[in-house]
Length: 496
Image: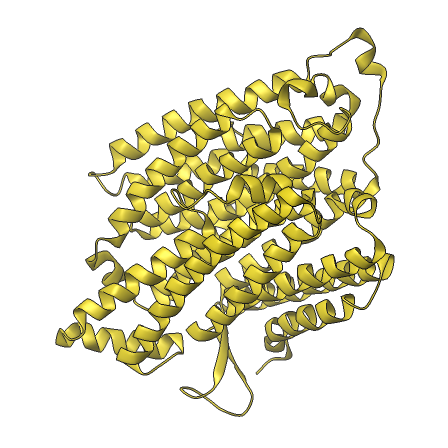
């Protein structure tokens, strides 16, 4: 086995251990360690991606001295390596984008705890991406949940505690359903490793045995991950959780945490119960129906909001709906579109939250949209960043969001029963997105007074870097989407 095959496991372990170390460090030391570890993970993940793309094959890394079915494994293909690299990159930029706010709001001790939760979350997300064991996935789902609550609660105010409690209640409900599904699956198959489960499920389906228990497994696991990722109507925790969190926390929770659960669901569809088994049930139709409601009602909710953070949160409800719509199409093209949109939304929504904080800072720390007049002049880079993110999610050409919507439309043409509805939903959603995003862009470029254009607010070097790179990534995903879509197709092909 090549030395590079150790990198995924090392990335998980270094993230987890650095989190523990961060808890006893203060201020800049904790921050520097967290940023350094994130940078190391990016390099290791990128090297792993280069390796699997050059070989054209996935590999399995066995931990310890016990092989399947008793041992534990991680499995790495192109899709896992690409997702790990991109997510690690987005997390680093999100932290840099909110660095000034972190230093201002958190004491040295709290900053150490913040990076404890952040590094634990990075390790948990990587584990969810790489794991080949479904019970290990459950363990890291819980670690991810605890870390997410920690990132929300670090502000230590009443509304934050309420938001974190609501998040915890909904998230534990999803975790509980997932665990029950795993227990039933283990009972009927006797395995926890994904390939072994898939073989057992195939045999049971061929013999016509345990049909009802397997159907319950599909329902429980899918429902659990849908709740945790915030699919409508299980989104009620999102506005407060994103709205009261620190900017970097909001970016990470919206862009990465929810998507890690969706990625795990895609893995389970292909590598645990099997795509044919899923298509044989009605769960795909249910996901598609919920996704349509999420896209429309999430956008309507964003239009009604007067707070820019809540507007971004409801926009995330709609964008998660898009991802589930791709899954609900039940085709490889739909999965490719869903995965590409996961990347687009991870970069774009993080950009929007970081930019919104810059606009707020330039407006006396208010988040009310109507009070952000002229903020695009007072903080030009934040204004440009927000405009780029807004145009991307609206679906303007040259941006990543445009390619996402085209991909969903093309994927829908493979299913004559859904194509018209998908086209209508995309059209309505685009119009609704334009209403609330373009409205906000117009407001931030409407000077409140003649002197507004001359005032300037500095974001800091880290914030400027994050916004600039996030905006560049949006253009790259829009103008050079081919390599990303090609890698996603190659990765999904490795799943089968």
